[in-house]
Amino acid sequence: MFLNNPFFELTTLLPSISMQIFVFFMLILVILGTLLDIIHKQNVKYFFQNAKKAKEQAKRTLSSKEKISIITKTVANEILTTSELGIGKRRFAHLLGMYGTLLFWISSVIMVFFYTNNLSITPSIYPILWHLGAIMTCLGGYWFWFFLRVDVLAEANPWYRIVQADLFVLSLVLNSTFALLWSFFQFYEFIIISSFFLILFIISNLVLFGGVYWSKFAHMFYKPGAAIQKKLAEADGSRDNLPEPADKPKKFGLGIKRESPKHY
Image 1 (tube, rainbow, N blue to C red):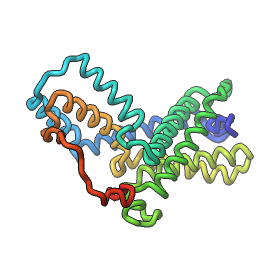
Image 2 (cartoon, helix red, strand yellow):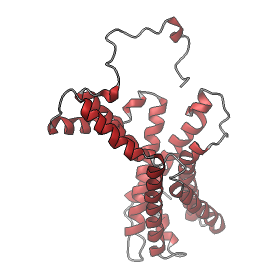
Image 3 (cartoon, rainbow, N blue to C red):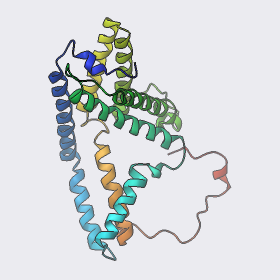
Image 4 (cartoon, helix red, strand yellow):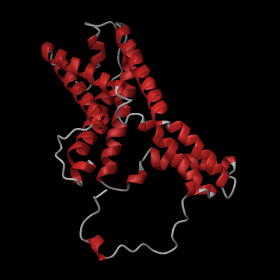
């Protein structure tokens, strides 16, 4: 199963061009949803206004070399490794989900566009990465959903409580789950069951990529820019109009030792 390209097998029912059009349609949904989110929340307007204010309040001018260095370190530490989450379960689950999703999406695009015609032979690496990415997304996503969500861990809400903010992570995890089930039943030639999970896979894609405006999907595009702006503001002294860090050690009292911090 892990060596099988499920999209190639699907060409017995659907032409490859239809799958490629579907991928383009998902991309258009993401762009439209993100633009609507920008217009509604005015995030970009706030970002540029904040950057302008920070430039006026800067205590020193950063050279191009310093800016490149700060951006590179921020991308390497806070974006690619999510170091702001610290060392722990939350960060590990996030990394599993993030890199699993990237593997799943990239390998999906490659197999759909390059290995769905009758003359193509799919290199085994791409189906392996596709299945591995889906499994990693499920592990990280379900771990987060059942055990690490703030409203479940710290506020004692049941895991099955669903609000609008959960749309992204829930559709993302279910998307990978349906993909794995579709691939499994397709490989063992359970036609009716595999078709059922294929339909669910398509629906979950529509919810995931079509629900950008209502979910936290667009957050993935804003977060890197905000992290870079924050580091640049710290380096040039503007600090987003915040005071300098205290020069004395933090004192929380003995009460902080009673339980691990989880009340966000």
